Image (cartoon, rainbow, N blue to C red; front, side, top):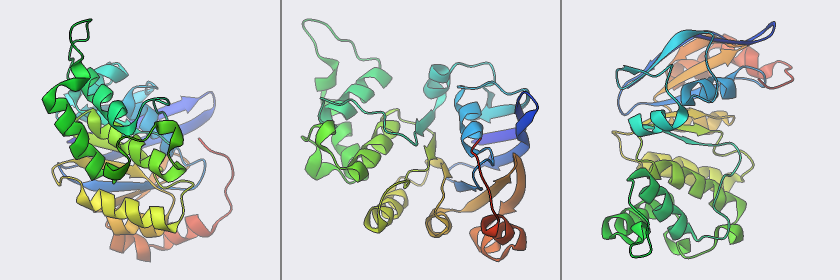
Length: 248
């Protein structure tokens, strides 16, 4: 479903992503781990088209997308939630989800017709709100949401793009233990045919939700395997016990 082949990106003399390769099958949940400066967010920016690789190939559902714009990749089935909130402040949770769905489904807006009120869109928005634990807050304005709820809505908006592959960039960053547990449960409740790639800093969360784990260090893949193997990997332990600075 998602294949990365020898992907490389440099900024001047700094090689941030160095011949990265991995493959996700349909429905797989893979977590990307690594210290600050490992190249994790750069990798996501390459996958979504915000950056262009110097070399290598990205395939989504069998289609090479290197030359595609970000919106073209979304139409092909790639969705993303970001490390920082990007919400429609002033709209409610339900209005935000309905608007995102209407844009994705190219429903028309005019003086006579509001595409966000389409019955199918309203129903799907309610389903997504339930999937991310926001049913009780569907009529709450985004700017009144707690930080944790905003993170949940960010995932909901990514789901509203109706992706085949969903990228999540540190979805538990800045939240407390209760929200971390809720996120783990939320991922477990998502449809199993949805392929998910997650950057995560919390090792416990990563090992709980992952089918597979990729560890980056200085832009290179240094481990690729199961969560069980990652737990006992000497190299993974050394990376997380070391001293690191900076962020790619």
